[in-house]
Length: 450
Image 1 (tube, rainbow, N blue to C red):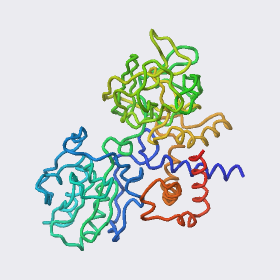
Image 2 (cartoon, one colour):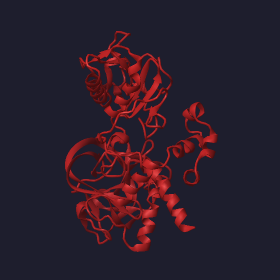
Image 3 (tube, rainbow, N blue to C red):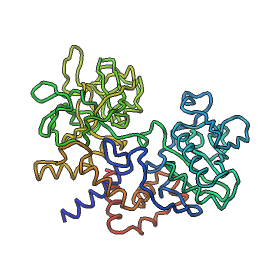
């Protein structure tokens, strides 16, 4: 019974980590080119990928309406591509406003349209919506969605137009209506649009002997300072380094740098998880249970607090203390390293951080890697000590691509966490799953409700 349980657990883990990017972690990399193949038009009412639009495997969650007076309006950029016709029936230029990612995909699609149908251009009928004409939480309100046709309005072309949009890199494409194709993209700063999580080569960790070592020099078996709590709280303790989930010594990367009032300065990629306060915090205070959550480094903001392991004059605390983020910046570095400890946490440059990335809950990510920790307990090694993405991450990605997304939809529907379920899916979907898929659903639901 142990082996089937482990296989089912591993399959379930794939659903937690498979939709994310491959750089510094499992999943498909941002901007990765697809291998050449014959293009098949989308069928009417078909959407690609075959998941709900606002899920991690597609365009991601709705992040809030953008208005001309809001701080986020600066996230939008106008598109003046002469090869694209903008309907702009409001005569305000709103249809031209979009996120940079949406703009890039739209410009790419415009080229494909002209190449396939000479003399025909791409036409945008709906872009950013500032007037409330779409359904609640529509991605049109964030400039992340467009409705498109061809300039000749030949509806016989729309099925292939939808396929071209998929090939152009839109994160979700829907042959929504006989009159247009709906396309949307991930948020520019969402984890789903970025690479995975790593630390720069020069980041420092604290060893059990009291010294410090660059993270690039760590080896499996080293014991480093970490937090024993699943939410970052709890006593600081030393935890064994099992392996590296990713190790890249040469590739240039962008790192988000968080500076705190205590003087700690942490750099890590945007998709890496850190522990931050939910609300107001007091400098130097011990965090209360439940006061912290995990957040992507790219979403950290000044005023939030993180956990630091050092106090005034370098005095170490037995537990992490809160320190307010005073400044957030972006720096360039070369190389990226993602060590995995048995606790799933580690203290880097004096700040408590998760070992995981691309999944927005540390507890779930830690559970997803339980089979690897068990494998290490049995064999004394987790393998994958060379450069590159760890084999276990690749297995999760491989499984996630092949197991049916109905598992994910069943979990969402059975937990009643999405209005999409009420509109398009029913609970009897669960009973149509095969044994492996049903096992994944039950296992994940059991863990999520504990």
